[in-house]
Image (cartoon, rainbow, N blue to C red; front, side, top):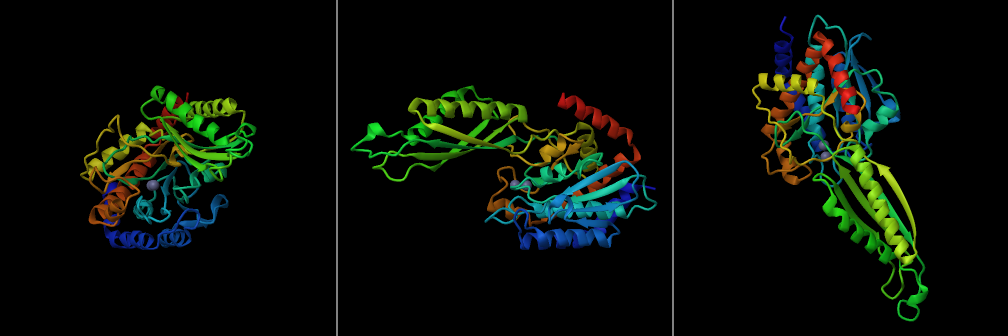
Length: 388
Ligand SMILES: [Zn+2]
Ligand SMILES: [Zn+2]
């Protein structure tokens, strides 16, 4: 029996329903950790197809896990995101990711007789802020999963694009207030420490690698121009090609802040909030996904070395188990995510086509892995060598 043909036909058959799911999530955007309606729509659709549903997994109200098949191995997870951007709605196209994951789930449920193994569709909240996948991983949700996949809409078809590792850093400088005209010599200027910090960072900027990113804004710059600022603070977003390189950059920025504080005798306090790790796209899985996209008639591009990249909590998942986060084009190349224009494309015919192709390719790749579990052992070996 041709499982893949059956999957394609089932997803085509369900295409209007999948588009309706996608459109209703788009129409009522819900931000991180508040995706109650979206979580409900998605889990209900999978339940109707025979999946057993658990909601609130990992202590997250808007997370869910839909399981099909008995407890046999391998266990393949298809991940859904469904959070929107504050103020911009679904300008990252997560409604398409969600509907594609459900579509893949429906396609796989339609295969009868069942293949050996278990399908999990996991609803992962708060990708845009909060790192739902990291919280689910900490709660052990991925412990018994052999591979994880999702798709993301973009402006190109890519299976191997990486993402940047990220971190947030908060700096606070404590000085001493004084009259800026009558007694400046008695003050300790916390704003000067902060300005020196920015200048120190700019002094080392020429040593940065091409994908190193250090961006900062002043949150508190003082109270009034006639008072020596006693307290200032700044927030930094730091990203790099890998979590290792990101950690080096964080240390360098902290050293710049120490130097600024020391120059004017301020006290420095800092807080590092680790963000997301970089994606390690698994080449075995990516190769299968690419071949399936090509079967569906899509041309897949090699990532450009200068590819624009953001960060995603799928990066952290990809450090734990073989994973892919491929991109399907819904918009022309000059249209970036998180814009009103990208949001319009995400509800267009191109958005619908990408969602359906992604659903099919995710399900077809799952079939490849269930039929040939040796590929999973190779994928795991590949990850182990990447992490060395
Ligand atoms: Zn986004
Ligand atoms: Zn996104």
